[in-house]
Length: 157
Image (cartoon, rainbow, N blue to C red; front, side, top):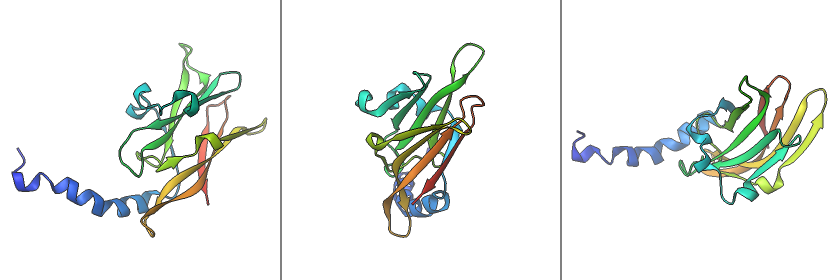
């Protein structure tokens, strides 16, 4: 059991350490296999406004709201080909390491297709800026090659 004076320590230290943690990680997004963040319970409401399909329904994007951390609650879910042996799609989550973004303007999502590279999506996201102690709007661009399953992501100002 943690002694009573030390129980509040995580709540006190997290706000102090958050800028350092975010500053070290906020350079580029990460693409990871789905985990607890991809739970249906985390799909942002209303679902109709926070999910979209592409490629005749083969690819689905959704905004995930994990609630915490407050400056990293938002992730992008990508369900897409290639299909596994049982017919299920690959499942990926885009965020910044295990954190997400501070916001997503999913209504502003755009998509383009290039046969050489695949589907390219752009969407404005907010990323914590340690220098200003506030989130900045930047552009998340990610490209999906449905044939290979390769998904790459980058942030630009």
